[in-house]
Length: 115
Image (cartoon, rainbow, N blue to C red):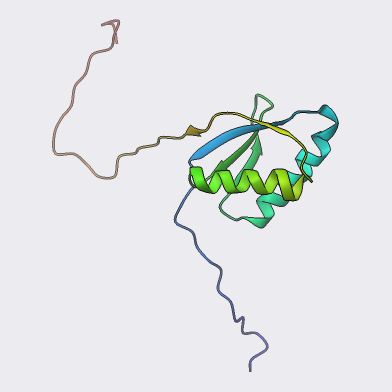
């Protein structure tokens, strides 16, 4: 065998986290547990995205509602040792983009009719 050969290939995922919830501790003393738990959750699941929003909220984003539910269960029970959490309602990101040139010309007027 060649010593330079690697038996595993990095997996590529074609999904992105679209469902988000804000997570906060019920007790302020559990904040270090939450931060450590979010780091461990992000490391254990490559599809989950954990970050702190500019508003100060700790956000967990997953690939779907079921995926997010499982991640939050793991966060609370495994990574935070059962510490109580406050979890917001899920928010779904909607994104769209232009993929090709249109054959039609589109014109529009602004609401104030000056632009």
